[in-house]
Length: 103
Figure 1 (cartoon, rainbow, N blue to C red):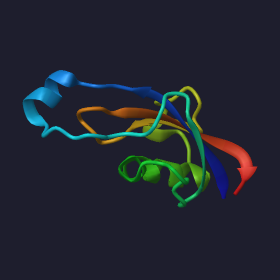
Figure 2 (figure 1 turned 90 degrees about the horizontal axis):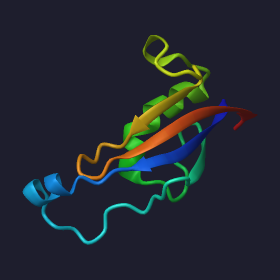
Figure 3 (figure 1 turned 90 degrees about the vertical axis):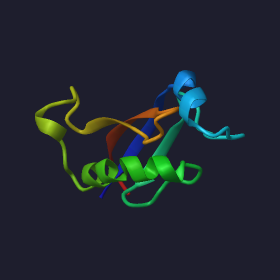
Figure 4 (figure 1 turned 60 degrees about the vertical axis):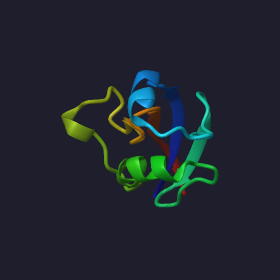
């Protein structure tokens, strides 16, 4: 099984949606742009957001097991995917890439 590199590429924040729909919360996300995690297949990397992991783990698992070319050529690198977490107020986008190193 291949190791998978997960890079936090972008964090968005939709204050207008938060003001209109969200109950105020004190703290939402600890991830930072440029932060890198390495996943060993099904294992969530330590410190990685549980909710974000639920969103991206199917893609991580597929890449770790040799899958590629999601959605018929969507990514320039067929051994990668750009996936966002499911937070509609402050989504985080992740670049997920297969490493040649085995886990």
